[in-house]
Length: 451
Ligand SMILES: Cc1cc2nc3c(=O)[nH]c(=O)nc-3n(C[C@H](O)[C@H](O)[C@H](O)COP(=O)(O)OP(=O)(O)OC[C@H]3O[C@@H](n4cnc5c(N)ncnc54)[C@H](O)[C@@H]3O)c2cc1C
Image (cartoon, rainbow, N blue to C red):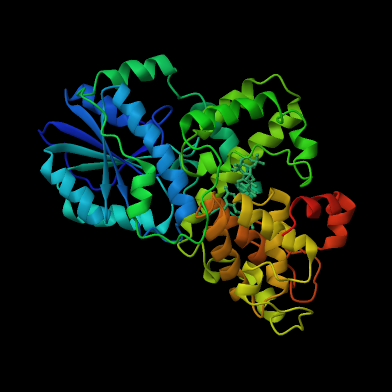
């Protein structure tokens, strides 16, 4: 078996009728190594394949905005699988109960799931594993170089991770079967029959959700993700290197929501970018973010169990931040003041408005936004909590390893190095509005995101 696949429980494949793929992180039909691995086993063992998704209303930090986006995408997954003859079931409740119940009721030979380094998903899998007696395979369909293969330890930074990734990339970047081959395989393992369609609106209406965070009009699902990818590769990829850090131009890909929900395969995106007829520096700058930085985030969260807590920060950063914890702050705000856009700084407020309204802050402004939270709160511990809370609650790409690492990088020096000492920040890299004014048209950005 490929080294994307890890057997989580040392149990055998049994002599039953169904192979189940418990979809969670990778919410797509195409270019999904977990679905393909499950289908491959179904073919080899002459079984049928079914796909389940377990909808858990209590998912930490999730709300109307994130559930609406996710369910609109899952509706397309259900439809796409049905066109291939594969049954899709939307279960509801705790996976430790519902997935287990489903496996027991459906005469299952083996379980496949997709890799996710975050705590809640790992706990779900441990709970399910305690209850089942069939093989449970986990497939890394998210990273181009599987997380466990890329490195066996927490990396210090991009400078230690990059050489490892670059050495392995030639072996993994190209291991995605052609779409026609995928289709042929998937068509062999379905049972046929009509799709069990669900309506996002009806489901949302009956779910117990935090409805204070509004849904977005952003198109969701695999088709929208592929279209956004094609538009980016034929458009803003050219000039990405030079223009991506100018927040008033918005010259990034804006693909992070699709990558976060697994509606788009990072591997497919990397292949498209690799083949694009664009200047080499644009291609290289984008692949650095998509592969090295993104997969480094998974490395951090997989190997550091305190990835979203102060305890997860490097020793040098904790030492310098604590040394400066009592430094006088020019401004101090509480969570509600940050959340309600009530700081003195129009630039910070614009970033917060962008987050509330569009579900995302421009990548460059995300750094400024988090660093100012450090500067204007009584302690670095509180700053980290506030940044993660707001990012997880309002960002459509939040609750993601990139978000935890982004906040840890900005506030607690993760993957960074010590810089010149400053009040409050200690040796943590500093940013201020004067620097922003030198770099980009701050007035224009503020004008775009007024309250
Ligand atoms: C405080 C803070 C919070 C952040 N929160 C999130 C978050 O919740 N979710 C999220 O996906 N990213 C987060 N990031 C990382 C980065 O800012 C976003 O990935 C990026 O802005 C997403 O927009 P894009 O898809 O247009 O990026 P592009 O510039 O087009 O990049 C393409 C892809 O590369 C990856 N990428 C880009 N920059 C980074 C980075 N610095 N670290 C890791 N991967 C990167 C992402 O998958 C991104 O979608 C955060 C960064 C900071 C400093």
